[in-house]
Image (cartoon, rainbow, N blue to C red; front, side, top):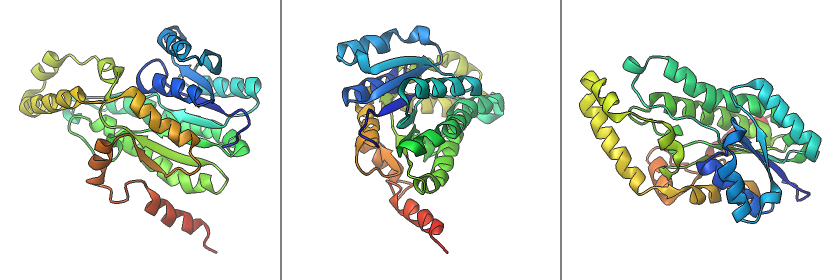
Amino acid sequence: MSNAAPTVLITGTSSGIGLAAAVAAASAGLRVVATLRDTAKAGPLLAAAEAAGVAELVKVKQLDVTDPASIAVAVDEVLAEYGRLDAVVHNAGAGAVGTVEQAGTELFRQALEVNFLGVVELTRVALPHLRASGGRLIAVSSVGGVIGQPFNEAYCASKFALEGFLESLAPVAAATGVTVAVVEPGAVASEFVANLQLDVPALLAAAGPYEPALKGYLATTFAAFEDAQSSAGAAETIVHALTAEQVPFRLQTSEAATAFVAAKLADADGAVVQGLTSSWLAAS
């Protein structure tokens, strides 16, 4: 990434990892365009930036990843105000708990719209500008983008799609000077789970034959979040992805996350796959 006034656009910065990443990136000297679907919810972000002494480096803008017009306006404004775009961090995301027989396909459409198609559209719009700056495209995925998890069918499907898209794009983007990486948190102590607004009694009452399994899943999940990584800890990995000289395709945010995905991926940082697929582009 260029050292000349680097500018990063981060989505989903009202709380949790996105808020922490915006403040951490500004603390690392980056100019941060912190976007939210509803800018009326920017208060905690602005307060955190002020407390960290980086308020002058954080600019709030409206961006709804499910609205292509909103994406286009936000990127155009960044270019008009700063003259460049050095990085995009896709952080906006939505959880989805339920199993397909009972939840139906609408839950899948909603998860894909936010977690996948929004990333695709913003990537499409941002790539020419990232190519001009030799920039970076970073997406906050999840260990659920590697390992499918019970009652997270829609969420994991959307994160699998995200990782498949970016793993395929990465060598193509690299051939034009753009670095692509995915950040994979495990359990993080943030508002993400609270924002799901799960009515546990109602979920269990409606679970039918899945009630015993759902009860076990919820107990396991709530226990995992009691020992969750902090949002600030996860944000450190994002800032590393933005600022390190060399960045692998895949980065986990904690030792626990690395150990979890290693159960499926021997190539934990994605280097083997990227080396293989990049070699295809050099074939004559």
